[in-house]
Length: 365
Image (cartoon, rainbow, N blue to C red; front, side, top):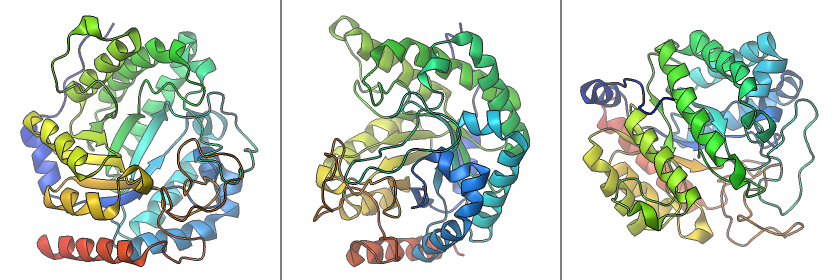
Protein backbone atom coordinates (compact mmCIF):
# COMPACT_ATOMS: atom_id res chain seq x y z
CA UNK A 1 0.00 0.00 0.00
CA UNK A 2 1.84 3.03 -1.34
CA UNK A 3 5.18 2.23 0.32
CA UNK A 4 6.81 4.86 -1.89
CA UNK A 5 5.56 8.35 -2.76
CA UNK A 6 4.47 9.04 -6.34
CA UNK A 7 6.83 10.81 -8.74
CA UNK A 8 7.37 14.44 -7.74
CA UNK A 9 8.76 17.53 -9.44
CA UNK A 10 12.45 17.52 -10.23
CA UNK A 11 14.68 19.82 -8.21
CA UNK A 12 15.17 22.00 -11.29
CA UNK A 13 11.42 22.39 -11.77
CA UNK A 14 10.90 23.22 -8.09
CA UNK A 15 13.61 25.87 -8.13
CA UNK A 16 12.43 27.32 -11.45
CA UNK A 17 8.99 27.80 -9.92
CA UNK A 18 10.38 29.28 -6.71
CA UNK A 19 12.90 31.60 -8.32
CA UNK A 20 10.27 32.98 -10.70
CA UNK A 21 8.32 34.32 -7.71
CA UNK A 22 9.02 36.95 -5.04
CA UNK A 23 9.68 36.02 -1.44
CA UNK A 24 6.29 34.94 -0.13
CA UNK A 25 5.13 36.21 3.24
CA UNK A 26 1.74 36.02 4.90
CA UNK A 27 -0.27 34.60 7.77
CA UNK A 28 -2.39 31.58 8.52
CA UNK A 29 -5.60 33.41 7.82
CA UNK A 30 -9.02 33.12 9.45
CA UNK A 31 -11.39 36.10 9.53
CA UNK A 32 -12.01 37.44 13.02
CA UNK A 33 -15.71 36.54 12.67
CA UNK A 34 -15.07 32.82 12.04
CA UNK A 35 -14.29 30.25 14.73
CA UNK A 36 -13.00 27.71 12.23
CA UNK A 37 -12.57 26.93 8.55
CA UNK A 38 -16.20 25.78 8.25
CA UNK A 39 -17.62 29.06 9.51
CA UNK A 40 -15.24 30.92 7.21
CA UNK A 41 -16.47 29.24 4.02
CA UNK A 42 -20.04 28.00 4.61
CA UNK A 43 -22.06 30.02 2.13
CA UNK A 44 -24.39 31.66 4.68
CA UNK A 45 -21.66 32.80 7.08
CA UNK A 46 -19.31 33.72 4.23
CA UNK A 47 -21.99 36.01 2.79
CA UNK A 48 -22.81 37.41 6.24
CA UNK A 49 -19.19 38.30 7.03
CA UNK A 50 -17.86 39.09 3.56
CA UNK A 51 -17.43 42.77 4.45
CA UNK A 52 -15.22 41.87 7.41
CA UNK A 53 -13.24 39.50 5.21
CA UNK A 54 -12.63 42.24 2.64
CA UNK A 55 -11.51 44.69 5.33
CA UNK A 56 -9.04 42.20 6.76
CA UNK A 57 -7.70 41.29 3.34
CA UNK A 58 -7.12 45.01 2.80
CA UNK A 59 -5.05 45.07 5.99
CA UNK A 60 -3.03 42.10 4.75
CA UNK A 61 -2.34 43.89 1.47
CA UNK A 62 -1.33 47.10 3.26
CA UNK A 63 1.09 45.14 5.43
CA UNK A 64 2.81 43.80 2.33
CA UNK A 65 1.53 40.24 2.55
CA UNK A 66 1.46 38.57 -0.86
CA UNK A 67 0.16 35.17 0.28
CA UNK A 68 -2.07 33.67 2.96
CA UNK A 69 -2.33 30.10 4.19
CA UNK A 70 -6.01 29.14 4.19
CA UNK A 71 -7.69 25.92 5.35
CA UNK A 72 -10.52 24.21 3.49
CA UNK A 73 -12.69 21.39 4.88
CA UNK A 74 -14.08 18.20 3.34
CA UNK A 75 -17.56 18.84 4.80
CA UNK A 76 -17.85 22.03 2.77
CA UNK A 77 -17.56 20.04 -0.44
CA UNK A 78 -19.86 17.29 0.83
CA UNK A 79 -22.74 19.59 1.80
CA UNK A 80 -22.35 22.68 -0.41
CA UNK A 81 -20.67 21.43 -3.54
CA UNK A 82 -21.65 24.14 -6.01
CA UNK A 83 -21.91 26.89 -3.41
CA UNK A 84 -18.50 25.89 -2.04
CA UNK A 85 -16.86 26.38 -5.42
CA UNK A 86 -18.64 29.71 -5.92
CA UNK A 87 -17.52 30.86 -2.47
CA UNK A 88 -13.94 29.71 -2.96
CA UNK A 89 -13.86 31.38 -6.37
CA UNK A 90 -15.06 34.64 -4.83
CA UNK A 91 -12.40 34.41 -2.13
CA UNK A 92 -9.65 33.75 -4.68
CA UNK A 93 -10.82 36.72 -6.72
CA UNK A 94 -10.78 39.02 -3.69
CA UNK A 95 -7.24 37.87 -2.94
CA UNK A 96 -6.15 38.25 -6.54
CA UNK A 97 -7.38 41.84 -6.62
CA UNK A 98 -5.01 42.54 -3.73
CA UNK A 99 -1.97 40.72 -5.09
CA UNK A 100 -2.38 37.84 -2.63
CA UNK A 101 -1.98 34.21 -3.74
CA UNK A 102 -3.32 31.76 -1.14
CA UNK A 103 -1.67 28.52 -0.15
CA UNK A 104 -4.64 26.17 0.30
CA UNK A 105 -4.76 23.33 2.85
CA UNK A 106 -6.95 20.25 2.30
CA UNK A 107 -6.84 18.27 5.56
CA UNK A 108 -5.85 18.85 9.18
CA UNK A 109 -5.22 16.48 12.12
CA UNK A 110 -5.42 19.23 14.77
CA UNK A 111 -8.01 20.02 17.44
CA UNK A 112 -11.69 18.97 17.56
CA UNK A 113 -12.19 15.39 16.34
CA UNK A 114 -15.87 15.43 15.35
CA UNK A 115 -16.62 18.41 13.08
CA UNK A 116 -20.14 19.02 11.88
CA UNK A 117 -21.66 21.00 9.07
CA UNK A 118 -24.00 23.88 9.91
CA UNK A 119 -24.09 26.15 12.92
CA UNK A 120 -20.65 26.22 14.51
CA UNK A 121 -19.94 26.54 18.26
CA UNK A 122 -19.73 29.90 19.94
CA UNK A 123 -16.31 31.15 20.92
CA UNK A 124 -14.94 30.53 24.41
CA UNK A 125 -13.27 33.62 25.80
CA UNK A 126 -9.71 33.10 26.93
CA UNK A 127 -9.44 29.61 25.44
CA UNK A 128 -7.03 28.97 22.57
CA UNK A 129 -8.71 27.89 19.32
CA UNK A 130 -11.97 26.66 20.91
CA UNK A 131 -13.66 25.59 17.68
CA UNK A 132 -10.99 24.54 15.19
CA UNK A 133 -12.08 21.35 13.39
CA UNK A 134 -10.11 18.35 12.22
CA UNK A 135 -10.58 17.35 8.59
CA UNK A 136 -11.62 14.68 8.15
CA UNK A 137 -13.24 14.06 11.49
CA UNK A 138 -12.10 10.96 13.36
CA UNK A 139 -15.26 8.94 12.51
CA UNK A 140 -14.41 9.29 8.81
CA UNK A 141 -10.68 8.91 9.34
CA UNK A 142 -10.96 5.49 10.99
CA UNK A 143 -13.53 4.17 8.48
CA UNK A 144 -11.59 3.58 5.29
CA UNK A 145 -14.77 2.70 3.41
CA UNK A 146 -15.61 6.41 3.61
CA UNK A 147 -12.36 7.57 2.06
CA UNK A 148 -13.80 7.41 -1.45
CA UNK A 149 -15.65 10.63 -0.59
CA UNK A 150 -12.35 12.22 0.45
CA UNK A 151 -10.78 11.14 -2.82
CA UNK A 152 -13.61 12.70 -4.81
CA UNK A 153 -13.22 15.92 -2.80
CA UNK A 154 -9.48 16.21 -3.43
CA UNK A 155 -9.82 15.47 -7.12
CA UNK A 156 -12.79 17.80 -7.58
CA UNK A 157 -10.93 20.73 -6.04
CA UNK A 158 -7.70 20.05 -7.92
CA UNK A 159 -9.51 19.53 -11.21
CA UNK A 160 -11.21 22.91 -10.69
CA UNK A 161 -8.23 24.91 -9.40
CA UNK A 162 -5.09 22.91 -10.19
CA UNK A 163 -4.32 25.22 -13.12
CA UNK A 164 -5.58 28.43 -11.57
CA UNK A 165 -2.79 31.00 -11.27
CA UNK A 166 -4.56 32.59 -8.30
CA UNK A 167 -3.58 29.55 -6.16
CA UNK A 168 0.05 29.51 -5.05
CA UNK A 169 0.47 26.00 -3.69
CA UNK A 170 -1.38 23.02 -2.17
CA UNK A 171 -0.68 21.86 1.38
CA UNK A 172 -2.27 18.42 1.38
CA UNK A 173 -2.38 17.62 5.11
CA UNK A 174 -1.58 19.93 8.03
CA UNK A 175 0.39 18.30 10.84
CA UNK A 176 -0.41 14.71 9.88
CA UNK A 177 -0.42 12.38 12.91
CA UNK A 178 -1.08 15.16 15.39
CA UNK A 179 -3.01 13.32 18.11
CA UNK A 180 -5.43 16.23 18.23
CA UNK A 181 -7.54 17.89 20.87
CA UNK A 182 -8.30 14.60 22.63
CA UNK A 183 -4.76 13.10 22.34
CA UNK A 184 -6.19 10.22 20.31
CA UNK A 185 -3.20 8.06 19.42
CA UNK A 186 -5.48 5.31 18.14
CA UNK A 187 -6.05 7.37 15.00
CA UNK A 188 -2.36 7.72 14.07
CA UNK A 189 -2.04 4.60 11.85
CA UNK A 190 -5.12 5.73 9.94
CA UNK A 191 -3.66 9.22 9.50
CA UNK A 192 -0.48 7.72 8.08
CA UNK A 193 -2.39 5.60 5.59
CA UNK A 194 -4.61 8.51 4.61
CA UNK A 195 -1.56 10.73 4.10
CA UNK A 196 -0.17 8.27 1.56
CA UNK A 197 -3.51 7.97 -0.24
CA UNK A 198 -3.86 11.76 -0.45
CA UNK A 199 -0.51 12.07 -2.16
CA UNK A 200 -1.50 9.59 -4.85
CA UNK A 201 -4.92 11.19 -5.36
CA UNK A 202 -3.35 14.61 -5.79
CA UNK A 203 -0.62 13.44 -8.17
CA UNK A 204 -3.22 11.81 -10.39
CA UNK A 205 -4.64 15.32 -10.99
CA UNK A 206 -1.23 16.70 -12.00
CA UNK A 207 -1.78 20.29 -10.81
CA UNK A 208 0.46 23.05 -12.11
CA UNK A 209 1.12 24.32 -8.59
CA UNK A 210 3.53 22.52 -6.25
CA UNK A 211 2.36 20.09 -3.56
CA UNK A 212 3.66 19.78 -0.01
CA UNK A 213 3.01 18.40 3.47
CA UNK A 214 4.93 19.70 6.45
CA UNK A 215 7.43 18.30 8.90
CA UNK A 216 6.44 19.60 12.28
CA UNK A 217 7.40 17.45 15.27
CA UNK A 218 9.80 15.03 16.93
CA UNK A 219 11.50 12.83 15.82
CA UNK A 220 13.56 14.82 13.33
CA UNK A 221 13.20 13.09 9.95
CA UNK A 222 16.53 14.47 8.73
CA UNK A 223 18.49 12.56 11.38
CA UNK A 224 19.35 8.90 11.81
CA UNK A 225 17.40 7.26 14.62
CA UNK A 226 17.75 3.94 16.38
CA UNK A 227 14.27 2.73 15.51
CA UNK A 228 14.08 0.47 18.56
CA UNK A 229 14.52 3.52 20.81
CA UNK A 230 11.30 5.08 19.49
CA UNK A 231 7.87 4.22 20.80
CA UNK A 232 5.10 3.20 18.38
CA UNK A 233 3.73 6.72 17.97
CA UNK A 234 7.20 8.12 17.29
CA UNK A 235 7.88 5.45 14.69
CA UNK A 236 4.66 6.30 12.89
CA UNK A 237 5.47 10.01 13.09
CA UNK A 238 8.95 9.44 11.70
CA UNK A 239 7.54 7.45 8.78
CA UNK A 240 4.98 10.18 8.04
CA UNK A 241 7.55 12.96 8.10
CA UNK A 242 10.01 11.07 5.93
CA UNK A 243 7.24 10.26 3.47
CA UNK A 244 6.31 13.95 3.34
CA UNK A 245 9.90 14.97 2.64
CA UNK A 246 10.21 12.39 -0.14
CA UNK A 247 6.87 13.36 -1.70
CA UNK A 248 6.91 17.16 -1.52
CA UNK A 249 7.83 19.36 -4.47
CA UNK A 250 8.81 22.10 -2.03
CA UNK A 251 9.62 21.44 1.61
CA UNK A 252 7.34 22.95 4.26
CA UNK A 253 7.92 22.95 8.00
CA UNK A 254 6.71 24.43 11.27
CA UNK A 255 8.88 26.05 13.92
CA UNK A 256 7.70 27.82 17.06
CA UNK A 257 11.17 28.09 18.60
CA UNK A 258 13.72 30.86 19.01
CA UNK A 259 16.22 32.04 16.41
CA UNK A 260 18.65 29.22 17.13
CA UNK A 261 15.93 26.59 16.82
CA UNK A 262 14.68 28.06 13.56
CA UNK A 263 18.18 28.31 12.11
CA UNK A 264 18.88 24.69 13.05
CA UNK A 265 15.69 23.52 11.34
CA UNK A 266 16.50 25.47 8.16
CA UNK A 267 20.04 24.10 8.10
CA UNK A 268 18.81 20.54 8.58
CA UNK A 269 16.51 20.86 5.55
CA UNK A 270 18.88 22.67 3.19
CA UNK A 271 20.67 19.45 2.12
CA UNK A 272 17.40 18.29 0.55
CA UNK A 273 18.12 20.89 -2.17
CA UNK A 274 14.54 22.10 -2.52
CA UNK A 275 12.82 25.43 -1.79
CA UNK A 276 11.74 25.85 1.83
CA UNK A 277 8.57 27.40 3.23
CA UNK A 278 7.82 27.86 6.92
CA UNK A 279 4.06 27.46 7.07
CA UNK A 280 3.76 28.10 10.83
CA UNK A 281 5.82 30.22 13.22
CA UNK A 282 5.39 33.10 15.70
CA UNK A 283 4.23 32.32 19.21
CA UNK A 284 5.57 35.21 21.23
CA UNK A 285 5.65 33.75 24.74
CA UNK A 286 7.07 30.46 23.41
CA UNK A 287 10.12 32.36 22.12
CA UNK A 288 9.12 32.71 18.47
CA UNK A 289 8.61 36.36 17.56
CA UNK A 290 8.65 38.41 14.39
CA UNK A 291 11.87 40.01 15.55
CA UNK A 292 13.55 36.65 16.20
CA UNK A 293 12.29 34.78 13.14
CA UNK A 294 11.35 37.04 10.26
CA UNK A 295 14.77 38.59 9.47
CA UNK A 296 16.27 35.09 9.32
CA UNK A 297 13.48 33.75 7.09
CA UNK A 298 13.89 36.76 4.80
CA UNK A 299 17.67 36.39 4.67
CA UNK A 300 17.39 32.70 3.79
CA UNK A 301 14.50 33.39 1.35
CA UNK A 302 12.29 30.93 3.19
CA UNK A 303 8.63 31.76 2.62
CA UNK A 304 7.05 32.75 5.93
CA UNK A 305 3.51 32.29 7.30
CA UNK A 306 2.95 33.30 10.91
CA UNK A 307 -0.03 31.87 12.79
CA UNK A 308 -2.93 34.28 13.13
CA UNK A 309 -3.87 37.66 11.77
CA UNK A 310 -6.75 39.41 13.59
CA UNK A 311 -7.89 38.74 17.15
CA UNK A 312 -11.30 37.14 16.85
CA UNK A 313 -13.33 34.06 17.61
CA UNK A 314 -10.29 31.78 17.42
CA UNK A 315 -8.91 33.41 20.60
CA UNK A 316 -5.33 32.67 19.57
CA UNK A 317 -3.98 35.70 21.35
CA UNK A 318 -4.05 33.21 24.25
CA UNK A 319 -1.43 30.45 24.50
CA UNK A 320 -1.97 26.74 23.96
CA UNK A 321 -3.84 25.21 26.92
CA UNK A 322 -5.00 28.58 28.21
CA UNK A 323 -7.80 28.34 30.81
CA UNK A 324 -11.36 29.32 30.00
CA UNK A 325 -12.04 32.93 30.88
CA UNK A 326 -8.42 34.06 30.89
CA UNK A 327 -8.08 37.84 30.46
CA UNK A 328 -6.28 39.43 27.53
CA UNK A 329 -2.59 38.60 28.06
CA UNK A 330 -0.03 41.37 28.31
CA UNK A 331 1.89 39.63 25.52
CA UNK A 332 -0.25 38.03 22.85
CA UNK A 333 0.58 34.50 21.76
CA UNK A 334 -0.47 34.78 18.08
CA UNK A 335 -2.18 37.40 15.87
CA UNK A 336 -1.15 40.85 14.67
CA UNK A 337 -4.21 43.15 14.75
CA UNK A 338 -7.09 44.00 17.01
CA UNK A 339 -10.55 43.85 15.37
CA UNK A 340 -10.41 47.63 14.75
CA UNK A 341 -7.16 47.30 12.79
CA UNK A 342 -4.85 48.54 15.55
CA UNK A 343 -1.60 46.53 15.66
CA UNK A 344 -0.76 44.69 18.87
CA UNK A 345 2.81 45.94 18.45
CA UNK A 346 3.66 48.70 15.97
CA UNK A 347 7.33 47.68 16.02
CA UNK A 348 6.29 44.33 14.55
CA UNK A 349 4.22 45.81 11.75
CA UNK A 350 7.03 48.26 10.98
CA UNK A 351 9.44 45.33 10.69
CA UNK A 352 7.08 43.43 8.40
CA UNK A 353 6.49 46.36 6.06
CA UNK A 354 10.19 47.15 5.97
CA UNK A 355 11.03 43.60 4.90
CA UNK A 356 8.15 43.27 2.45
CA UNK A 357 9.03 46.54 0.76
CA UNK A 358 12.66 45.48 0.63
CA UNK A 359 11.56 42.17 -0.89
CA UNK A 360 9.53 43.93 -3.60
CA UNK A 361 12.50 46.11 -4.49
CA UNK A 362 14.86 43.14 -4.54
CA UNK A 363 12.91 41.36 -7.28
CA UNK A 364 12.60 44.46 -9.42
CA UNK A 365 8.90 45.05 -9.03
